[in-house]
Amino acid sequence: MGVVKELYMFIIRVYALFLERVSQRNKIVFIASFGDNCVPVANELYKRFPQRQVIVFV
Image (cartoon, rainbow, N blue to C red; front, side, top):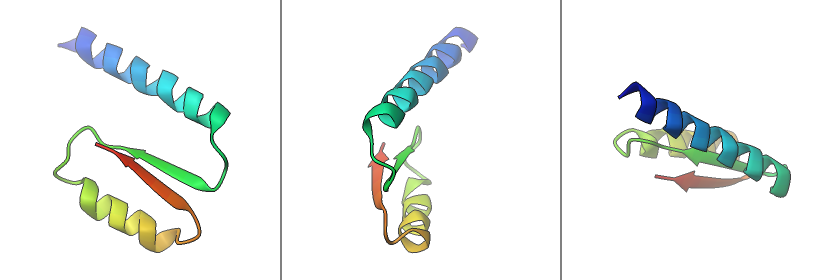
């Protein structure tokens, strides 16, 4: 199971680096592995950063 977790974390890091290179600074990208807690977190991001675009990947 550790290998799967390491592979997953590597993919997330590569994806984050890619988004950092191509995205503008007025966006927040939220990647959720588990859907059960992403709605409250996304709502809080919307409230705290109303001037930014919030993108949620579930």
